[in-house]
Image 1: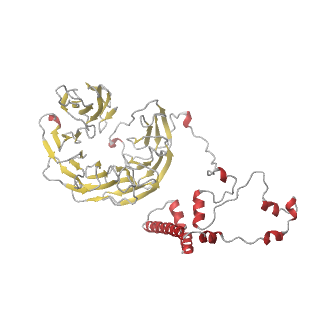
Image 2: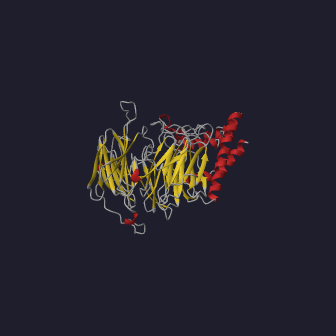
Image 3: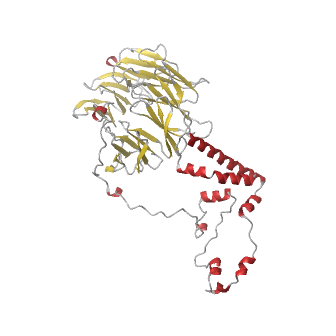
Amino acid sequence: MFKYSKYGHVYAYATADGAKVFDASSLKQRCAVQCEHLLDIWLSPLGNYMATWGRYTKNEDGSGGKNLLIWDTTSGEQIAAFSQKAQNNWNVQWTDDEKYCARLVTGEVQFWESRNIGKAVWARLQLDGVSYFSLSPGKAPAVAVFVPERKGAPGIVRMYSIPSFSSPVSNKTFFKADNVQMFWNDLGTNLLVLTQTEVDKTGRSYYGETNLYYLAVAGNFDCRVPLEKDGPVHDVTWGPDSKEFAVVYGSMPAQTTLFDHRAKPIFSFGVSPRNFVRFNPQGSFLCIAGFGNLNGTIDLWDRKKLAKVNTFAAPNASHCEWSPCGRYIMTATLTPRLRVDNGFKMWHYTGTLIYEEAVEELFQVGWRPESLAHFPSSRSPSPLPQPIKILPTNKPKAPATSGGAYRPPHMRGATAAGTSLAEREAMLSRGQSPAARRHVPGASSKNSSNNRSNGGRGGNASPSSASSSPAPASPAAKAVDNLTPEEKQKKIRNLEKKLRQINELKEKQMRGTTLEPAQLQKLQSEATVLRDLAGLR
């Protein structure tokens, strides 16, 4: 594995028995450390310190071994050692200026001045049951701590200024919170807290229930973020200006919404199968994508115009990241998420693939962080670059001709109209029969033979023979008459539900929400729904 410091000055990579640290600009080695059974590493924001975590073992006397080690990256000297069993929330956290650092132990968060880490604890934030903490970025650092629900008491998130731990500056309690994720804006002035339960008691989700809360460090505002669609929160990201954030939420297809710095909705990006959202570092573009068990479709939006720039596909991608310049996106397929087709691709923000590399086993890939001062947002748009390297298997192909909707064997050869599931359901709701006459290959059509003029054996058929047969009953009347009272009530309930959904869409349209084509089509079906409902009543 490898890690960059927050600002990209220092780079480190680890093997099973040690780690090496380099200056990222000159690639000059700063130090090399030996550490058995190494599993994870962490660099401080300026790269002056490195934390390593190895497999926990016990000493011969039964005491716990020191498996969490702190190193000075300039000299390679070990300056502190702790015993840390669990890998969850193991890492020591530093403030952006590296003046203070902290780690979580049972019942408290311990603080040190970084130059004295490993010596006497400088300050303690004691809170019974605390299970998670996070230091804020910015010039005035704060710490947020979380205590989960227990014995009927609600979960708590509290924020304190460092080092004033006598009273919290902000406090929020909520139920349905077994664990949390915390998302600070870059200024460290506001915090989003994503709560999750291990079990969804309503039974609507296998993965538990999630909620999103907004807290201001100043303590003058907090709320639950209003999410229109029910379902889990898939992803959350702050804008680089710290004044807005985007959320992907709801059962699939999910909804993506942009909120302002007071958690008020600004714009809805619509409903689509997506579970990932990121601003580019300049905040001029927004990437909304569907990875993992979704098909890898990526939508790029212009933040200023709130208009979609392009849509393209990166199949099987499990990693996505903006370049520091904000003009390129890197997607990658990594092991062990997927053990075939590993590699990475680089895309221009217009959706053009410009570089691709296949790797037999790719475990990690990432851009080196750079200061935004090198890439100001006021730059003019870059021209479309020429592709550098594209593998033969991914060169543009001629669009495949659609074979049409799938038809089961017993429906093949029937008339095309009304044979899809949606069409059959619509016909049934109108009281029509979706049955279609099957055509046997090689057999002549009875109607066509009767309509031939003086040709073949059926050419002299009398016109009165067709009119002598009685007219069939109306399909709608026949269908309604054949319904049992229970079936009729079920049909009425379904139509009333459709009518409620249409009214909700009308309200959204009146509020200025842009509706999807499928939603507009549902609005147009209001007259049909009302007519069918009147016929059943």
